[in-house]
Length: 90
Image (cartoon, rainbow, N blue to C red):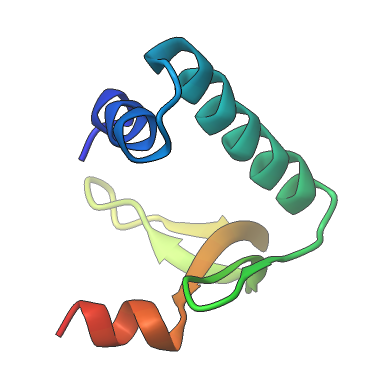
């Protein structure tokens, strides 16, 4: 499902216009993004949890030269599906 398809689905199920649904979807995406950027998690009951996870530093290799390259520790967004979503996907 693309963002446009999501907007149309929200519009159809809620009885609001596509334009209003687009604003709602954009607001949700922005809220989740800003919350994760602040290092906090977003928990949606039954759906799942968006959170920021730490990725440890490691050593990689340049495939062309074989040179050892340090890869620094980073933070990355992650999603854990909730019980209702897991059961719906079966």
